[in-house]
Image (cartoon, rainbow, N blue to C red; front, side):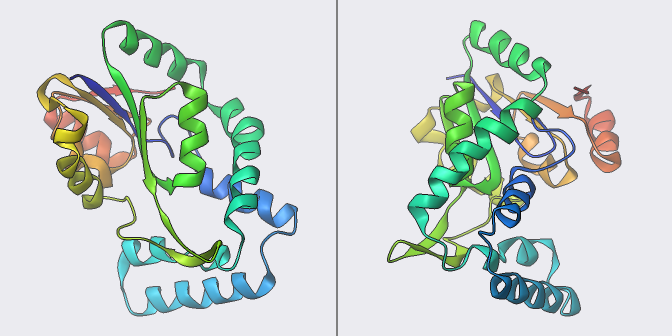
Length: 215
């Protein structure tokens, strides 16, 4: 089966991320307690001081801790409608339509929270979505992901695990991403497209012969 796998942050959503938009709106609406932000900041500084790297920093979601799951899901759905969809370039919609006509299925794969990625996938008519799942205890977020944050090599691992379930023929499928951290899983695909690439991915794309697009 042919799939077209799209990263979201920086790829179909240029210059920003869904989580940044979410946090901004949560602050504006008074949904993030000051204490949660303080705990998040302290944990982030510890990660930097101990040189634990990007992966450990991205796992830190203390600003979600204690927030009720169901109201957050409703808030996220409204955010997708009002703040995310209007930022997606028309070129993205055209490309997805072109791929569908050629028989591709559309998969969104992102480190963004699953409760954000799901509504976006629905609105874009994607066939599947893979986002980071966050731990919930008694209906409230516990402050961290269940398992890996979908970043870097974690994307390679989950694609490998889901290969049979999705019936994905990598040699006939395509991938769209914007960051050098995506290069490893991009090499799994017959067609790789570097979208709005940063410098390192642009160099990799030139070396690998991948198409480069900007929208």
